[in-house]
Image 1 (tube, one colour):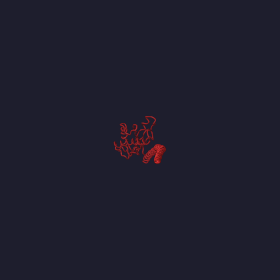
Image 2 (cartoon, one colour):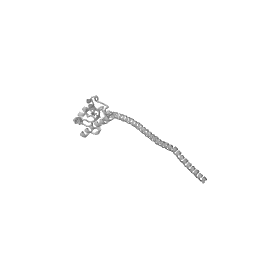
Image 3 (cartoon, helix red, strand yellow):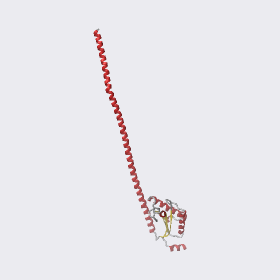
Image 4 (cartoon, one colour):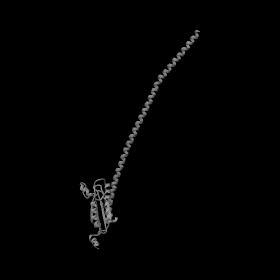
Length: 239
């Protein structure tokens, strides 16, 4: 009986000891693993933060590259536009010189053309429309064409020095066209009698430093050129 009781007590002690040892082991594992879990969580959070920082830096870098590339493209486009504008201005100038040379060669190629009459009408700033006064001057000039034989009309448009060269070439051409259309439509002058040119601001007839000078340069000059002298014209008209 005593041995049984001793065995029971011993077994109980073993179980208690085992239980105590198990609890201690669990507590030890828990104390060791909790810091590891917390450390892992911290690493995950830091990794995520680093990833966000990398994405943020990459985004700013890409934005900076795009901005620099955009600025470079804009500068390149501006350079191309400036080059094109310079090329257009040079082409327009060359064209005006060519037209002037062509007109000069046409007149010189005909037999002894001489100026018999001329008229000059002026335009408002940036205008290509004939005024009532302009039309009256052209009417007086056209009255001299009735007795003219074998003639041509040299029509030269001009501008003042304000504005780009290319625009002034076009403006001077419109002014010359306005004069030709008026004379042709009202007096039935054939198209082959007109030789017109827009010289822009290339040839001034007065200084552009004053308002009056600029007004005189905003003009269209019309010259009546004939290859018959006045005595022949008079005799022809009298017959």
